Length: 320
Image (tube, rainbow, N blue to C red):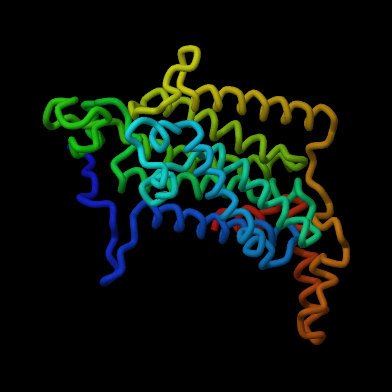
């Protein structure tokens, strides 16, 4: 028993090629935006805000992810015999998650300010759904036969074409299977999403504590999975650990420190208002038909109350 890898990393829509790596990332983004919209509405926000903010966050995140990858593996593109133009070939893989999160957050902040939205409640809304995007996006590694783990005899071992071995054909005996780290991370991210959503409702989390949970959960899973990977990276031995392992440790500690600070200072409760500019709140939205204003305003107020009180409607909307 084993898990086969795709013969090629391209899906064909008739005559149109769609690279599996890009398809996985796009699908992950769509799912994350859709779920975030539902969470934001339950939180008291206006439908459409998340889609508008995604127009900032997604490009920033993709650029940040690529920059981080190129910076941490620069020899692939600027070393001896390398072709610098390949640094732009994003479809071949190579997005550093930490760069994507960092610059993506900058895009979220810019988008939020253009719409008069408070940053912390927005980030608490979006953060768990990033796990969905990241988990689904990991299937792109399966299409590219990359970032797999060390050899294993487990029945779910992953088949890899010898041409994709880190050191090339002949590195491992014929028939060797490997830990499917993409599948491990997918499962971990989806599980972490539901756990965080549950804890957010149960503990009425706010003040950035949802973001802290997201960072801690991802770093814990990523740190464990990283110990299995055998792919060649430039920073493979930094004081005995891979650079990504150090990043997981550092960010986990920082997130835990913020959780403790927000909890001890009382800043970690759910915010009552999600708009810094009252004129841009749904109740003051004059773009709808005046005949519908009363009904729409009542619906929006109810959605805000549901979110603040942490009732079952929020949970059902976030899990949809």
